[in-house]
Length: 113
Length: 112
Image (tube, each protein chain N blue to C red):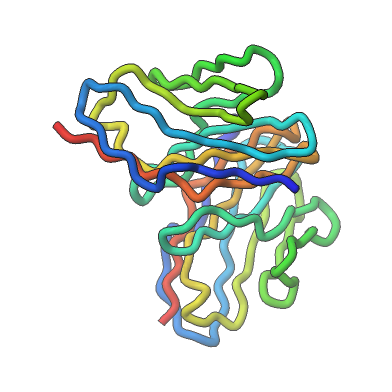
């Protein structure tokens, strides 16, 4: 599997601000994904980051709130916009080279005050 | 509809005793099934996966899981627990070859 890094690893932000999370993979991968893990809960898929085109969002997630970029096959960003305390979560990116098995980054722990 | 049910939110075992973490699934398709582990303040690590080859799947750190279609189950086992196994474990199902659906997780505690 590829090695995945995320920046920042954690952050504390004020409500109303935005945070951009970066995900870097050390090799070219077909698919990249973004997940949210709310406190004490499981993971929920936010969107699939498509290289060179708009991300595909899951029900309940919208581009205005979670804009995603994927400029190439090794990098993606997720922005959490106009944050509220309810956005406090762990945000994880994952990659899949074969379209079946996903490998995850270490996550970004976000606290919104 | 696809879904994953982890039957126990918490499991406690003594070090050296067997571990059983239960997972049932529902899928209209032939699923791929996964177990991931999340240690405190860490990301998810893949333990093992089932993709319609052998029904008994061996993973890392001595874990294994058996796919039972008749019972729609994919339980995770380990013969002897170590203190380092204490973590959150997630069962997940893949459909349409790319999207993962996760169970709610099972927290494993290991007592000395």
